[in-house]
Length: 144
Image (cartoon, rainbow, N blue to C red; front, side, top):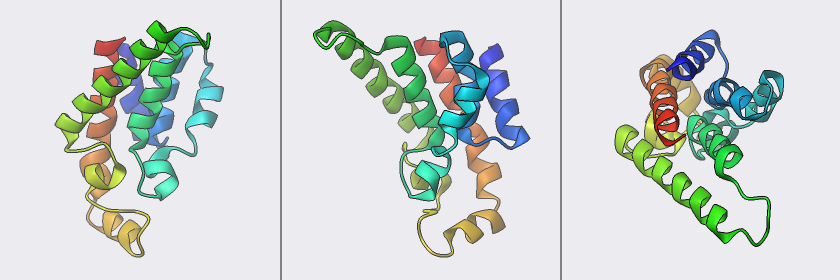
């Protein structure tokens, strides 16, 4: 539960969604906070506002890779486990948030002209993103 609190507080402080997840969970898996924040920097806003996968999801997938990823090319069992955990995470987040991409979760495609301004005007970041960070962290706690 502490990691969920850390992730939500970091997001509330102004870190992006991926940074919040990575910094909350990374230190327990060998990645210091500063490195986690750097790694998450380009991932927020659906891959730097390109309409990609939600940053909270991307940060979570990196955490799953740290926990379950394989390092031996012939370790099919570990590779399969990591893939299964990734798919399960994405399935659960998709059910909770209505999708796994930033545009699906935010209801705005930040890669399109005018959408960033609309999202700000309509408070979409405040309405959607804190929930996505919290729910991603909750799913990670369950899977880890």
